Amino acid sequence: MKRFLLASVPLLFSLIVFSQPKYEFRGVWIATVENIDWPSRGNYNTALQKEEFIHQLDMHRRNGMNAVIVQVRPACDAFFPSAYEPWSEWLTGVQGKAPVPFYDPLEFMIRETHKRGMEFHAWCNPYRAVFRINRSSIALSHITRVHPDWVITYGDTQYLDPGNKEVQLYVVSVIRDMLRRYDIDAVHFDDYFYPYRIPGKEFPDDSSFAKYGNGIDKETWRRSNVDSVILMLSSMIHEEKKTCKFGVSPFGVWRNLSKDSLGSDTHAGQTNYDDLYADILLWLKNGWIDYVAPQLYWEFEYKNAPFGVLVDWWGKHSYGRPCYIGLGIYRAGSNVYWRNKNQLPRQLAAIRNTANIAGMIYFSSTSFEKNPYGWNDSLRQHFYNYPALIAPMPWIDSTKPSPPVLKINTGKDSLIIHLEKGNAADTLRGYAVYKTIGGLPADSAGNLRTDSERVFMFIPNNPDSELAFNVRDLIRHKDERYYITAISKTNNESLPIPLYPIELKPPATH
Image (tube, rainbow, N blue to C red):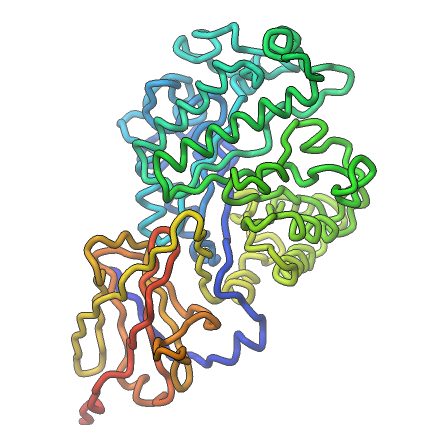
């Protein structure tokens, strides 16, 4: 039985220490490639893998996070049973080998994430096929063996050719299959479309350009290839599962101002538009992606791409879609600026003070394990000491759930409230609890409003979750009022209903 205790604490303390928004996406990337975050290198034991993942989830939830972005397709392989691609070598040590004892990691990770009231975003790499040619384990069923004609070698990595139309359809099919079988909240693509340039080496795609180029210049053709797969994925995702989001995490610089009047005042050596052939602004303008999460892993003081300049630029170029800033907590201690304990807090303050920035995602999960510069403590005690809801996306869904039903039991010293759906058809992520002095405001129709209220507590939607009040505490703080709302899986919120006060008698004295 998971019971949440509603302690009576002073409301003004956190308001004074740090103002927090009601809505804020707080995510963490969990990288599986090269066992960066999970599972740890050499851990091929099913039970220990589960323990590791749960440990990371619980750490992030304590830190105030509300989403994880987990890499489930790092190199045309899978962290789930797939008819298209083999099991990942980073899961079992050998590509194509199933877990022993068998389990479905993706199903397990989604279940545990949702149990904690967090969103699960399935992170996929579109074209990377063999991570390191001389080191990677390659199964006979891997796409590079089945379709060697689709493969381009560049440096010591192999990629599926983004210009090959069959490849584009294949990528869409793989994601479609995953989407049909798993209750994921979002499909998430990273920054590897065309690969980052290797100095002095041109990406060898002359063959497909000759076949599909249709007389346009190669750079325009490459961008059109990436545009095509993004549009196909967007259409497929929203047709297959209307409530599933599609997000992209691009390199932090779209284009330098020296190349384009729309670009940022930066001097990046490579950019999305000119080198990775990813025209992120086009996708945002056309509504092909539901959110963007640029990777801004630099410090404020980095001359070629200053953090503050880029946060401001992305806030002005998100075109009505949520923008979550990718933060490089892994950089802690890497240079004189990242040895300053105020670097991350300053970045969080800049995010909250910039219009149209809706949250942040940290790279990467295990960077939190050592609590660099006490940043875990800063999150728990100041920045995230109140939970945040994830803002709904009305173009995906705007249906509000019904208010919850409360089943109340009173004891000598306690008030226990069991929460249930107000409508059996509702699909809920959890319940938001609000705490006020004197009560919530009402609109002209008499409906209570929570728009300007910060969430006091978030309760995941689990059958055995309950709220517990200490009755003596409640009577001692007579002016406090509690309310509760239901939060759908698409983050829409019901009307609030009073959670307390109800008719109570003072506890008996002895």
